Length: 428
Ligand code: PLP
Image (cartoon, rainbow, N blue to C red; front, side):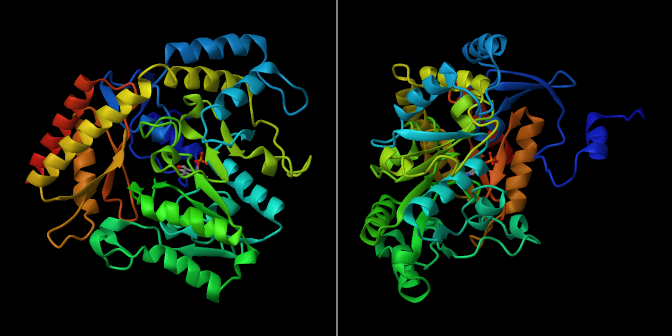
């Protein structure tokens, strides 16, 4: 084999550039909140491997559970039953919002979204889907059809799924209707009503799919009055409400699910990323009454509900469910949000700080208040050189996501915020 100077060069020979990584960084191992690079340098991983490693890298209890399961049985392929899969399902539905008590396991976020859309169409007998601009739901055709966080993701893949109607996401910092929060008439909801009046009859709409907190699209929590209004609108028209909690779920926001902050229960929810601490697992969760109408063979999978991933999920859910784990995430998150808001007061390049728990967005702006992706990128590069991995999001890539593992201590968080401030100072 031809030899190359670095792993990154070797990767460029065999892995398509379509898969774009955040940093040209070769890591050799991970433990807790840190990864170690090939040169021995340690980095605090505040990306959590793209919001997946809620318990950090290589959590010993997760690894133990995985190792034990690997030695017993590592695949079922939808051919036979195995207890760990049922146990993982029981433990997951025990923490999902009330009534969402039955699930379908798959492997990735996009697959869960596909499942949710299929379930909605199947049980409603309707075809239309409402989604929200800035939403990211995955890269497969159905999921991509409801994804509008960046046109680059959709480019050259048309025609996508028909009968998808995009509606403005309630991104209050940059209100699509140019209102201030005080003058808000929830125009984003009126927009949907007008879609139902002019573009598609309500009784042809199967579902509305939304991230209660926009992830890839900019880390934007929807305001409570919007989500409660959306719930009512869906009920009024018999439209199923799907919450995509692939990124916001499993403790990330200081509650089990973002839905819990709002007291709004969707009809269908998608879960992935954090649920199995890095092992591939996702789920579509819904009410048994809907799930039971999804007939045998109407959906399926070979790898979904893999027993090793289920063992990881069981351990993950157990740890997050322990006393005061989530309370600690919520209160630490509040503290960090306050600290970041204080920085926003001192550094005008920060336009907005928002979020819940350890799902925090810091939006960068220029002198005119316009998105400032360049500053955001400089901050990320500076932090990387100081051993802190941060990733960005938003259409102009001008929002940094603070998504550390949920096990990050106060001291580690303080250190990360100090590095972040140092990066802010370096912009001056
Ligand atoms: N839905 C949301 C909210 C996401 O954030 C993502 C991924 O970032 C997905 C779906 C797609 O997940 P996956 O990349 O596992 O297919």
